[in-house]
Picture (spheres, rainbow, N blue to C red):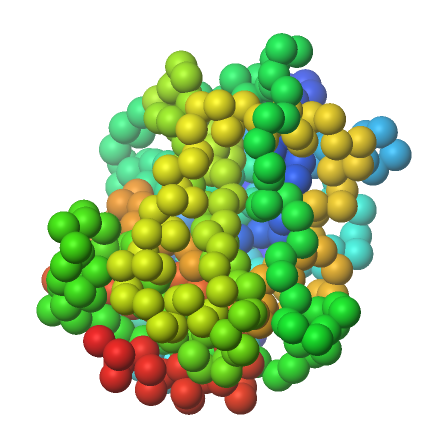
Length: 439
């Protein structure tokens, strides 16, 4: 049981620029929820480290530099779009205690017990009342602690969030930040000459199961979560098989392809079932000119690899890997401009906004027959040392819907991966079987 001990609104420890900040179209068409993540640290039970004071003091200083995170979103144009009020309202900081021990969480799979270590949000409240950064420090009976975070999806992608967290940790250790964030979001404002010039499947509803007219039935099915491990030798075996035709597929491409194929097999699709694999591509260096170093915001574009289940299952691993490579390579400067222009011309961007929370039934659904595979290979997200050493585990705080998954480098830096996945209960055991037997 987690018992809340204290709640604080941590404001920037100094003056910050005020005023209204432009939010690019890409940020407008993204989940309005907070990305929930969790860090676990082992400390001696007798440790005299005042983690709460260290975290709060350094957070206030970090919010001076990353001042948009201390502001509040607000709707404009009757809720069709948003803007950011840089009003220095601050972040939410909670302190909690638990009778549990870190070892009670075993493989750290994102269960409701893990979710309880991260601040929850009432999204029925007006958006201008919601802090953009949420922090919960939980002290365990063994002496260890966890730091649960929620950072607004609208304000930051994974790279930007890692930039903030790593520099917050540097401040906590008494060090200087390594580089200042670039906060001018107008760099992604579409120019008048830009126009949609590609088919944009990532902005269209994903395929439904054959014979179904909606995804409501699939949304309602009970799900479960699992954390599976892939050793370096298993990853190399997948690469060897996928690259047998003189290809050069990456570790992510072959593992994601393997997962996609296993999901199709476990779900028992008909061979003609169309399936999408959705993932994000960072375009900071793909757009021309490249975005400035330290650009703070969302600079990733969702893309989808499309195939039939029959093709994925019957053809070699290189086929699925190639589909993923093709989807990634289409994210060129021209495609990025087309996407931004498409969103600019969209009168109601609220139809793309959704909540990454369990039970939500609106917006696009990437569960059966589809899948979302996110790569967390961002170095700055790991090794968050606030003065008491690096974490023993970092990972997602929740997996809210069927088909949501993460590929995460193992914390022991041995080249292995941790794979976190949410699937319908009826498919999970079969998926695990194929996941290891097909290597």
